[in-house]
Image (cartoon, rainbow, N blue to C red; front, side):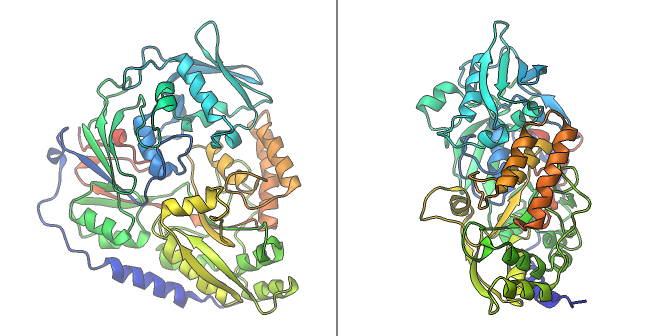
Amino acid sequence: MTPRPARAVAALATAVAALIGGCASPSGSTADAADYPQDRELVIGLAAALASLDPAQANTQRTEGNVLTSVYSTLTRVDPDGELEGDLATSWSQPDPNTWVFEIRDGVTFTNGDPLGPEQVAWGIERYFDPELGTKGTTAIPTFESATVDDQGRVVVRTSAPNFEVPQHFEQFYLVDPVVADSGNLAAEPVGSGPYILDSYDPQGEIELVRNDDYYGETPYFEKVTFRVIPEEASRIAALRAGEVDLVGSLDPQSLKQLTDVDSLVTGSVDGIRTHFVLFDARTGPFADERVRLAAAHAIDTQAIADSIFEGLVDPGVYINEGTPGFDPAITPYEYDPDRARALLAEAGYPDGIDVEFLNAPGSYAGDDLTVQAAVAQLAEVGIRVSIKNLPYTTYLEYVFGTDPAKQPSALNFRSYGGTSAATVAASRYRIAQTGARGSFFSDPTYDALLEQAQNAQSAEEQDAIYRRANRLLHDKAVVLPLFNEPVVYAYARGLEWAPRGEQWLRPYDIRPAGD
């Protein structure tokens, strides 16, 4: 058995503890519910800057998504127990395999007074599938044909093939005002119908919201909410300790011990849906050869990383994890085997190793920077010499999702995918290897055919069986190198009541004073 090089990983873990360990303790008394009147501003810390507030262009649920879900409405939504419920849609039915019909809530308007009825809903759905916008909708429901309004005032969605997941996907389709979309700036000045209204927007600073007192649902407690972008972990810790923010939901696991002495904070973690992984650029260069991808997979000791950096909160993971369609318990993490890694490199024609680049946006995800550094150290031991290319998060997104020829992905790319339901998790994870899909650096006609079959499946059981075959192909060809599920590590003011969720939602209307 090959010994594990845990010392390098442990050294990195020690370094981060030293970095954040010097934060000063807060002064003042322990917070309680009395400290949170309705006119008190609620401040939520975000780990990364926002790219856009246009729902068609937004990239990340845990940053833009937390603002979008506060400003906009959707047809459906997922409740804290993971069950699908109506938002603007009061009910839905499937009269035939290719048709879904949605009843729409009466009397709803956008916050500028414009109507939000069936016609606006149908227009908003059509916009999501406009190929010129390049939205995620085109891969979430690739068989979409049309959204219209029938003579009973219901929204009718038609697909070219059966799709039993349409209502699940609509929980992330935020509905915009057609007038504003045509004449305004949705990326920075969105107008929605949700529980809050955008008051000011600095995508790298603060995003300020005010309560929508005409909201059709339950009135949110806080009159004003600020999302504050704090990319550095040490700064997030300092802000929590000083009482400058009320909640942060994306801390590094090692940060918890820096906050246990703060009586005014509640800290902890819950299992997360988000999976960290390494995505190879398999279109060109050494990683176009699956033997080289497998060599990298066997060179990284995910158990050592999990133990040293993630404080035992996670185990090495698989890309399609339990609860996701296509999960296969027979697929297990790649075995740590540096000797096999070296042999595979030599077999592929690289006996002296290779020199490649690793793209990352440090501080954007829990433990990402330390994980990349540890992986790079382990890769070097088998002859995969890596230079790290660190970029700010919004710039990083331009490289992994953009179309600018001057901004292309690296040979290795740190990636992380979450989701809010089984349907949305599956759609994002499987499309990572679909030919031509947004952010895909792989092509295989067999895989593409399996995805098309899965998307046209007429039952969950049929789809699961097809996705299992796709999952096996991803694993055998080492298209992605899964690391682990990111735990949701949080800290919030003791005077608040909030239930952390594995989807990493930080929704202001889910937060209230304790005992309210």
